[in-house]
Image 1 (tube, rainbow, N blue to C red):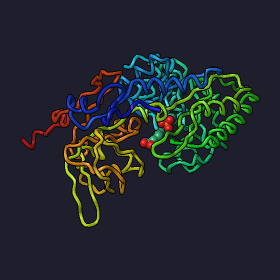
Image 2 (image 1 turned 90 degrees about the vertical axis):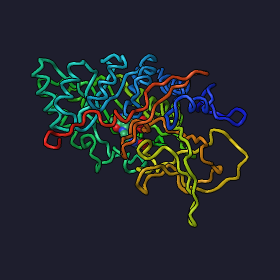
Image 3 (image 1 turned 180 degrees about the horizontal axis):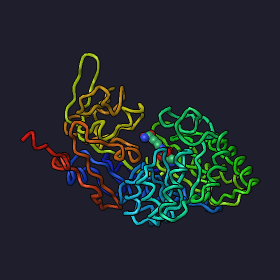
Image 4 (image 1 turned 180 degrees about the vertical axis):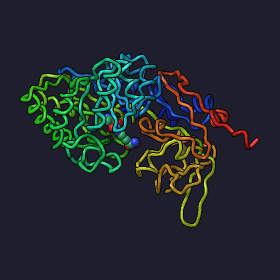
Length: 418
Ligand code: LLP
């Protein structure tokens, strides 16, 4: 459910005509709907109202400060995976006691930054990381709150690049070794074990893998209890999928019901780290058609956004809906939508039936709110696009378009070249 809709043939974001926004900010740009963001967050959060829980929105999905502030004002915590994300989180005004720090490769500097910020907990992913956290916490004269991320070896049935809970993946501690690691961590003087964490993958469209992972983790918590290691938090990660094309993922209430049913006998706070399900369908990428061309083989629609702006189709072969911002009476054609980047992998859609776009037409690339801007780059020396938040009939620039000067900021030509 989202608030991008047509009114008399023109595409609107809430009550704001997209053509007006494009005239004002130029193209390409990311556009988010405030009402959709709020609705999605509340739907997820309220689905768990019967149990003690904390929704830590996963910053990596979309880390714009304005979006983080929206969720924080609704009571969210945040899930971060780097010092940079922690910095953004703190700038957004989040209570540090609602921040969880995940990720397989936390540096010493990042661990120290998080300890000094007083975060809720680290999700630790290896024996060596546990030892490192212990050593740094000791040096700072504190104790680090830690959950161990276990890898339950469950097939999440998603794209291999975004599956994380299989034994062959780099993530978490092998389920069979997790007890040993807990005992090791429990013996470390500057570590306080407070939780168990598991995240098995992203864009999951079935409930079963979530439930199976939870069952496995429950076994572990049971045995930990017998060993006198008490758990206050169970972090079940993110991963709930969305509809890009015709997928039918579970609604957050179905997801919550399945989890709560399985976890009802447990006495601790559940943590969730949803990203995509909150922001994915709340954002689009708006681009302008530069040229069209027909080779004997194919039709191409060349737009002013490329794989540096939205890499998901190139990287995962993902489907993103394509809509005209102004509907016309044109015939339909089958075409590839491609960008200006010098790579054949630079495409947004392939062999797609779509209206016959003309140069100058605006195109909306749908479902681009998650892992869109946050994965964008400056490849081909393209300034990063601007981001806009619409609310009712108003719209707000929430990130400026980069300038050419931004592109070379920090670069130096050494003296010997002068
Ligand atoms: N927690 C952890 C530890 C994660 O690694 C992730 C995502 C999340 C939470 C949030 O997952 P979500 O609810 O968004 O599924 N770039 C890829 C997705 C990569 C996901 C990485 N981890 C894409 O565009 O599909």
